[in-house]
Amino acid sequence: MASLVVAHGLDYAGLVLIGRDAERALVGVLLEAARGSTSGALVIRGEPGVGKSALLEDAREAAADMQVLSACGVESESELRSPGCIS
Ligand SMILES: Nc1ncnc2c1ncn2[C@@H]1O[C@H](COP(=O)(O)OP(=O)(O)OP(=O)(O)O)[C@@H](O)[C@H]1O
Ligand SMILES: [Mg+2]
Image (cartoon, rainbow, N blue to C red; front, side, top):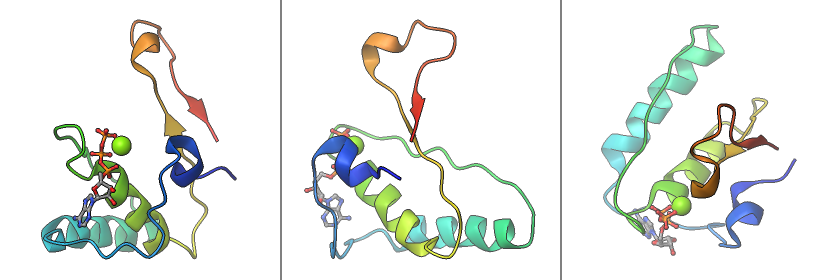
């Protein structure tokens, strides 16, 4: 399965996230709920470069015991009804 690392050409491997304890805790709550078959959603948004993808990669690592499906969108597809590609 392709990962965000491949999709964006950035390497977040081994990155220690600074100042993201609250966000990581939220992700942890969602993952724990998912392990108990309770669905959930979390919107991660912010300015370019603020660390959205790094947080997603951290979430992927926290979900290493789970099946993770990823989708990435590009701005030029934003007007389409079903943009994004699942990898
Ligand atoms: N909490 C953090 N602690 C340390 N480094 C971080 C943190 N968040 C992001 N970085 C670093 O900052 C850079 C930008 O992060 P990232 O690619 O996740 O931003 P982004 O919000 O996804 O950007 P874009 O909107 O352009 O996709 C990366 O090199 C990443 O490793
Ligand atoms: Mg990004």
